[in-house]
Amino acid sequence: MVLTARSKIEMGAGALNGDLGILLSGYMKSRIDHCVTGALVWAGERVFEVLEGDAAALLTLRATVSGDDRLADVECLEYVALTSRKYSNWVVATPPQCHPYVTGYSCADLTAGAVRRFVADIVGPGTLAASPPLVAAA
Image (cartoon, rainbow, N blue to C red; front, side):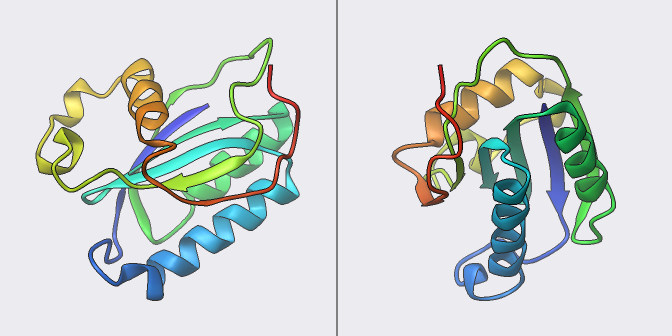
């Protein structure tokens, strides 16, 4: 599942010590509790998330994200069955400030594939936190 949303909370410098940190720690706990893997990346005021897991867990998390008052304009860009997982854990990451998704982009250009590529590019060099392995990724 690929989700995107606009944040209604502060996402800038020092935000990890406030509402952003609370949001991310709660999301990490819920992803671990549901054995959902993937990554959440925030850039500017946007949140991008790729999730892999059991259909029931994904639907529960989608409803939770959609009902989260800290987010607006939540969109599910893709919800499809996978034959294998790409991620073995759940990761939180952010790109460098010069990345095009931070400096400007068109929301109209957001496709599930573009978000998946963006998230995959940022995970690694931009990783801030990661759960322990939850599954064996293929």
